[in-house]
Length: 199
Length: 199
Image (tube, rainbow over all chains, first blue to last red; front, side):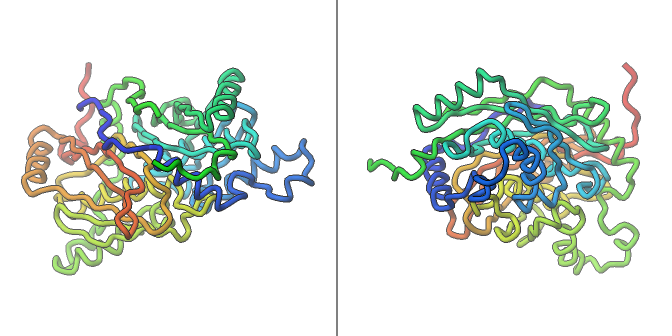
């Protein structure tokens, strides 16, 4: 087995970011799941509601049946049920495992960053399959307070901050079925409506 | 934006392959979608049926609504509808784009290799997001006769053959919304039931 190498063609990322920013600016409620309701929901019960509502916001994710088991500042645990997500050999389908790795990035954003100031985008995600996923699979992501503050400050000052999330997707008995590397950006909403610089 | 690097921990791949082989051996009809029906379906209409049936075989894929537009030996085109697959900013969700990149590898297997002799596994897939996917997205994969023969011969002789598929996910107007690199293996069924070597 050859060692996997990065073989994506070189692309100007700024173009993606500007386009994503434009799309998000056009959908003003993009990163703010409660919209106007947000103002009247008690801050203490908001996390509990959000934990249940977040997996329902995107149809593709809702249909997978993924659950948020833990959702705190800098700490997220999600679980994908095997039921409904089996492939033709009765283990978990590769795309369900991908979704389990991708979705928590958004959850971590919701629990860790000010949604009025920032929004997240995913720029790249790579998944390596280690063992057949013969049961429910969970993944945990953690970012320290220092990391969170650095990312928020960076995005505030420079309009954007890149960060990576490394995932280990595990069965209940701890067996790692896949590892993932996700590249995310936290972007300031203040720069989202700025038009691309003339060149 | 830093250039993405491979940051997966080093793992013994042979372990995954052996486990996958065991799972597939336990599900004998794994790669043969027609099972006993296969013998009575006319060889000429089989591809037309398979093109419609293949996206329905795995629930996760079926729910995405992905369609096979073209399915020939060494040539597959698939399309993912935006409808039902939107994210919170109304573009196509990252996981739907991943599924569009992953699924055709199985389709290419079905249209290009002898299912009685071989089965495929995906070992790694990386996706890089280039532009927001604002409409239906399609992807095309091609392998030459020479490549197909080399892969089949390699798998026949050595029990397995690795190959890569590079994808460009495109909107109808040709805009590339993501690029993907998939690592696959074609494995011989003859070695699927061989127990792991004692070490």
